[in-house]
Length: 314
Image 1 (cartoon, rainbow, N blue to C red):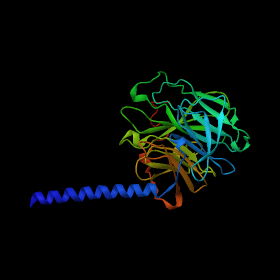
Image 2: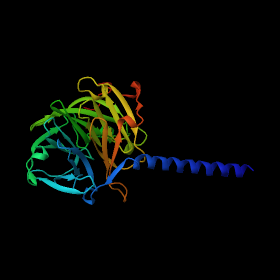
Image 3: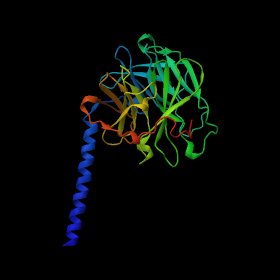
Image 4: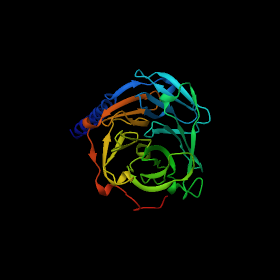
């Protein structure tokens, strides 16, 4: 009788796990818009231009191009930045005039001394298929070793936004042991060599590093909402003070099952678009959520690590 009871519990537990997995799968794929063009297997940054056209870039090792994506997921136009290289393109953002910024700042091993951002004109003003970029360079003044020791490896980047004439960078934490902090930095928005200014940090999670890595960022058109993306969540920030995005209210939005989610942007103040890369035949899709239709779990103040509480890193 005891063996039968144990067997029944095992069966019920297995069924529960399967049900939860199916629910998570539905949560993600019910928001799917379209499967993207096969040339976008490593899509790592997305943005809407001022005319509402949708653009994407691929990760490092691909061409130095941004691609206009139609509603069916197909590429209709590609623009080559002739004075750029795609060492590790990771995110896109734009300023108030519609100039696009492309972040070539991926640094898995924390060994790059100078990182690059390419600034190009508003894509709707580019008549042909080529353009030149303004080149922004920056470094982390307190990174003294390349690479640093394992406990200080928090200089990789995959996310940034434009805000009030500056660019704001969010680190992808690779510390060992993993502490879960993403660091916020500020640099200028025009061609120059910058020392990245540390502002504050935020603790996402410490359960498993690959689920907590910040891979993209976006600001709403009205500049009142910031979202950070990881493999299974959006982190939403509102009501911040000054330019410290982590000083206000924070919320967690679960997106369903884990996929390699790498890019996020706002279509309007309530609508978020995000994409995932293709991995083992899974992904290469775009998805949409409405902020007024999802569950936003508030993050308690004590869960946040704000401004100078821990300033081991720059």
